[in-house]
Image 1 (cartoon, helix red, strand yellow):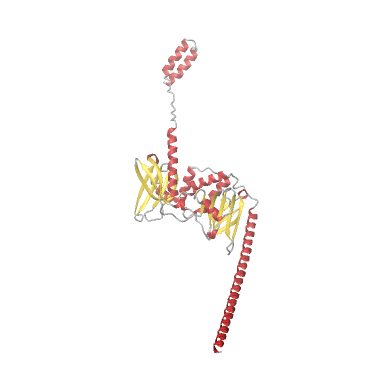
Image 2 (cartoon, helix red, strand yellow):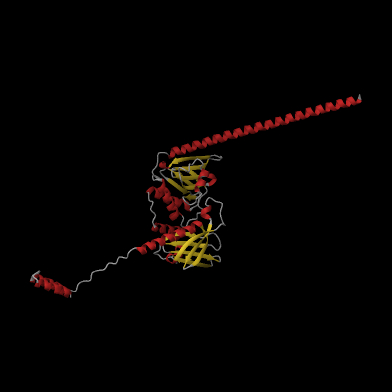
Length: 409
């Protein structure tokens, strides 16, 4: 009897434990369901808010596009002309005396990865149908991308994770401006409408962009060596120009100028004229300096040697990697190290163009103009006498001509 009671108590205890466990499980499930419902509700609310914010951002973009519509003419040129001019402007007027590492304006074809970054910022951009011309990089994802077909814009919308983004056909682009205000804000406007306003820029870019837009407006796509020379002088200032003129004469045109890399033993500058390459090296904290001059007519070859170290994880990696410029003179090698790739390649390009011009000038035939020697008056007088004897001229005519000739003696 006692054993049966024990079994019954054990069975009741087990049942009670099972009921308690079931109740606990039910309570836990209820709590989880409640948390899930709360999370779903929160997510739904966040999605609703995000959708409302994106709708507001889209409405803002539509309003901007409406404000910009109805104008045009600035880019009334074919895509290839736009690309060619931009490449020429970048190469000859933008790069000299410019710090590309600090710049926020990426021009075609500064970086071969420009298309990659354009696609990342504007995935809707069909790069098989339009080619990037330039990219302006602002803070917090603000971007301006000009292609051969559209002006794309993207700017943070208020204090949200959304962007005001859109595209304007380039046929409707009437004006473009990139300026810096008194508070250090870099502002891009199209047709007078502000598209980005960011405290993230480089002081030399607005001036360069203004000159670029002005040339587009005037359809002035021809860049002369004299214009390059004048702009470089303006960029480097009178003090540096005075240093340059110690080695480059007044009749030499400055075709390229590069500041040195940031190190104690850095180059002060590298300058290419239409006649020579000059490199000024500073050593021992500027107490001593070395100057190397290479006249193009003495240079056998000039080439770049790529370095695998020093690569930067930036959009401009290709342009900012370091390399060595190798110059061959009279069979001897001179290596200029720690040049940015674009600096070295530009120096090589200037050298080749100047050497080609010199060789073409040497091939031109030398035109020598010789003045006919004046005939001896006495010989002419003898000829006149023979003409009188032959009856070709009269005595009066002979006398008059004789008087003229005698006056010349």
